[in-house]
Length: 123
Image (cartoon, rainbow, N blue to C red; front, top):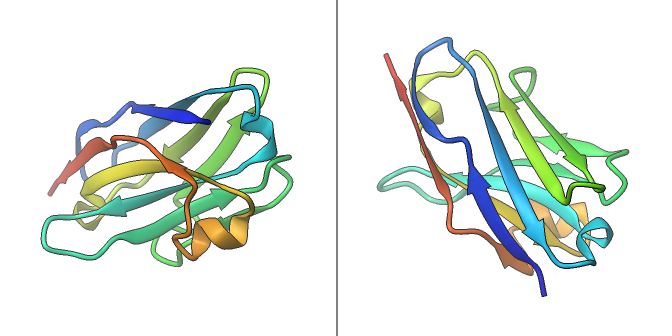
């Protein structure tokens, strides 16, 4: 069992930065691929980023590539999402996810997910 708690969301102006954190409980954190997805009001859920259990492989949605960076610290049971050059279209609730591998993260086949943290980017 893994429980995920996101933090770090907030209100930021376009062009600004935020760093999201996801703290995981459970001793098996390091065996899971982790990721982030987001959902804006009235829109479908959107994959944002994924990272393998070792941190050696990362994947990004085209819409965030070059602006967002996903990382993890297995010693701290935490995954991060550094978001730079934020745009109003990045607004949404960001959810942390865990799955058996990055393919399942990218396909939305999560084993666990958190409650989400709100990110609002003003123009």
